[in-house]
Image (cartoon, rainbow, N blue to C red; front, side, top):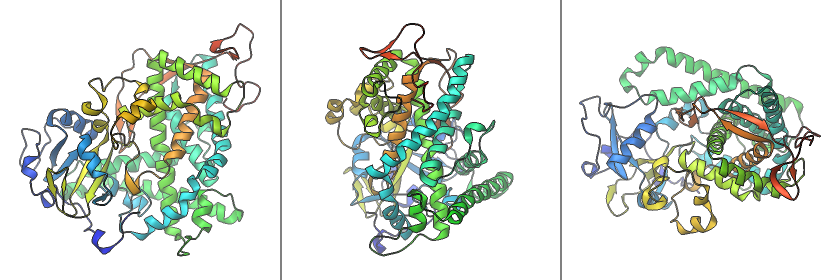
Length: 506
């Protein structure tokens, strides 16, 4: 449970590392630091996390960067990160990028400060919405949304066209969280352009990152137009969400989903309810966080599957064996796709779509018996480098290998070395939802299509607080139904394609 005592309440606003790290001079930083500007030589405003990954390779498991006089400490060494996971001494820190989202998400689950009471209230009210029973109830709706994706890909396959993987995965995951969580249909697959919610969301995420790359005193002047656009984007998000909530209240009937819990459920001990303003913030939080990171995870996984046909064949054989000839997998069958899940885990190792999280000291302490930290000092955990620590993952950390997540391999690694969902009490509440959805969708697509990569494509990654492959496209080819005695192998001419009888995405 996150601390809410007076001891845990820390000053608001940005705290530069000089204020909390007494031995900051011992932490390396890039060469050629400039007065006022800091470590700007060779840096990119559009890919700050990937810049930090490149610096981390040179500077080691803990380092610092200065941007316009603001000092940041980055950590990624496994020993340091394991110590930061100690909930008795450290807690979530709402870092700059996340704090920049507070104008739209306020004290929602992702952006709340530890001392804000609505975080614990919302967590306790909404946690049952991610129980096994709730997940099983979401499963049919996930299948229904996936059917809309496969209808779209079937048409592309019939015409020999490429598909826009990030765009289609964004449509899929937005519709999934909207349907399962809030009983709403954005009609994403029927639109020629992204839904206005997606456009506004991308705008707010990009703006939150852009704010980190401008000297604070100059931001109002340099970002005047961008600030106006961001204000309009926030207004659009709020209007869309308010309309979703208004319709639910007007309908007056319970759906048993997350929105019902927000509107109708009291805290089991205190009897408190979420305020209308907090309901809006939680809906925005779930719609954004519930689809943006999962769409990225699916996109990266499909990229790697298209590049590694042996891995794709092994995963496809597992799907054919476990799901058999059933047009729709049952809820329990998804969890049995253990190798498909390894593909997803390995994709998230290489490209964790939430690429960093921050931790702050709740008391004066010494990190890993080496780096003194005052209460309130914080650090940004660089997850892509944690997932590439050669002391944990070996010398070939850039190689895509799902067998890194074989149970024996997992047991052989120390804890706290794999953190795609954050850590501790403030880790992602929707982790199981995202993993079930992504494993289900990968299984459906592998069973239905052979995936062909664009031979000219080279992976480029867009940053908007999250990671997403840029410009990724694949060509899907429909498979034939597998023989029961030969999983994964095509049957002769004239066989019915898998799932043709019912448009369920299976």
